Image (tube, rainbow, N blue to C red; front, side):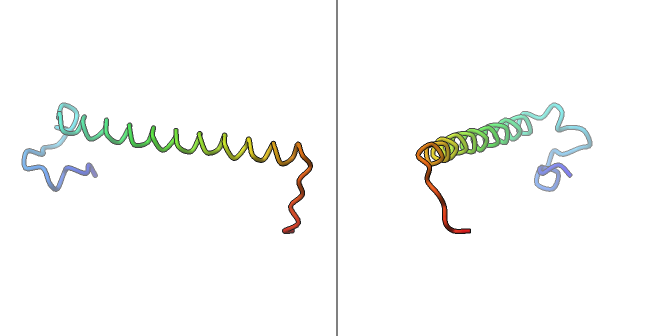
Length: 64
């Protein structure tokens, strides 16, 4: 189901393919997904660097 199907007064079958609001909605979602990916990639790299540094100095986690 298309999110705008219930709330759009001009909805008709297949209209989302040419709807400007639908394109803006898709663009906003695309930007949000990219921002989440960027966030996760940044912190994955950061955590990886810290892990490598701890391994390099021979740090041991005795939590096991």
